Image (cartoon, rainbow, N blue to C red):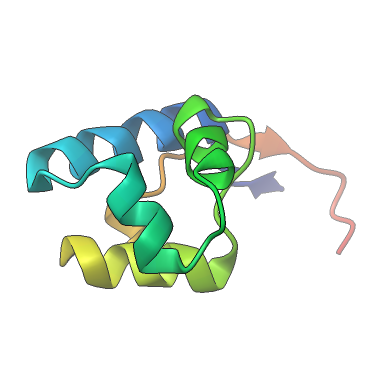
Length: 83
């Protein structure tokens, strides 16, 4: 059975592209999310972490696109049918 997976680095690159296309600065995103620092945003952009589901939804609203247009899939992983 094949299971899709998210490519964190490519997704971070995509978020950065969308951010720049909309003219949003990293400090603006920090304020939008109510973060104390820009660390989380920079970790997303570098692909070190992914936004939580709530934050991914908030990004989709901010960018005006579906979450699927933000997320970049990696190669499909082969699983042993374990759920």
